[in-house]
Length: 83
Image (tube, rainbow, N blue to C red; front, side, top):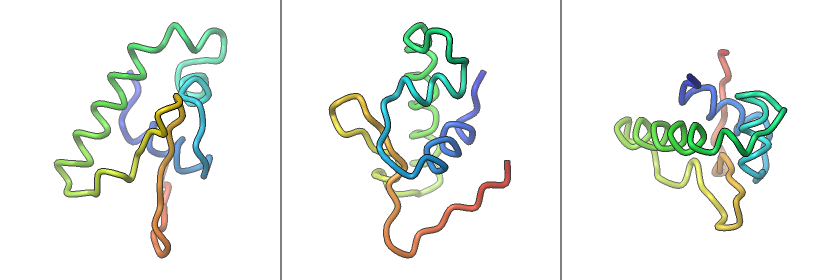
């Protein structure tokens, strides 16, 4: 099972809005990312819940309404990937 931190790390490394299938392919394998839709939804839900519980702003991980998602950083924000 993918950890929320892995999902956030992938989004942060890409530095742009990207189709969910691209991230799913990175996390669960590239064969057929569409079969991982339920896993994607579950991982994204868990990530958002953990961010909310930690007091992190809601728009850090945001969707654009067209199937793309991104790690949205404000000027001065930085990402430290310790994976």
